Image 1: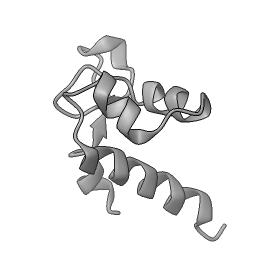
Image 2: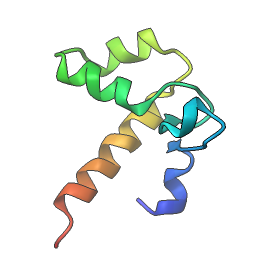
Image 3: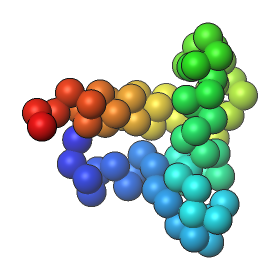
Image 4: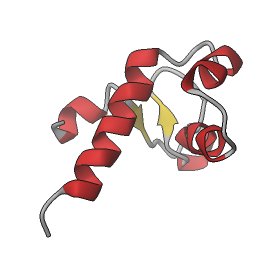
Length: 73
């Protein structure tokens, strides 16, 4: 996923939540998704708790993380 496309998924702005990365169009920190998944919750659980986040954003965030982790050094 191209860096420009990621701005539709999440962004960081000092004026929003002190610069904490949030899902675009929301005040929901991406860390909340990570915490849910680490705690054994599902994506559906997360989306139920944060209805302003779109499923497409969650999937794109996970795909971007995967691409970053699996990229050749």
